[in-house]
Image (tube, rainbow, N blue to C red; front, top):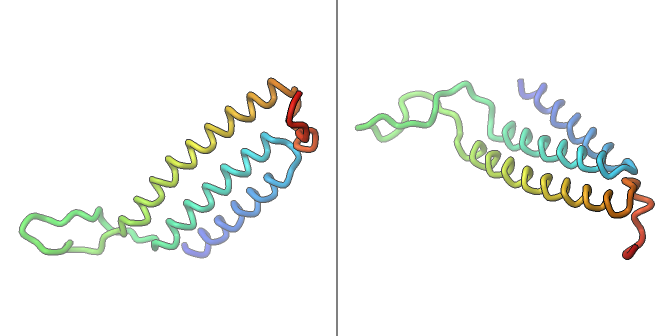
Length: 115
């Protein structure tokens, strides 16, 4: 299972970088989203994929009775999802306003500072 996830992470990184190297601003945003998904999956894979129970300790016990999933990577991924959503939303609004002003989404034509 780890090999499949490692190949998926590599594919997402490759696709994200490829999309970010295109000339369209929309493709740049899609690449940014793919990179954030790849980073989340990398953190999830680094935490270890375990078919464990939720990390809940029964009352009267000092530790869980069975193997549990590590909660730290899950918390990091949840935080990263919220941050990447905010960054993508801001970038989408920025691209929309840029397209309204300059009427192009080609990165090579976005050289001027004033119009």
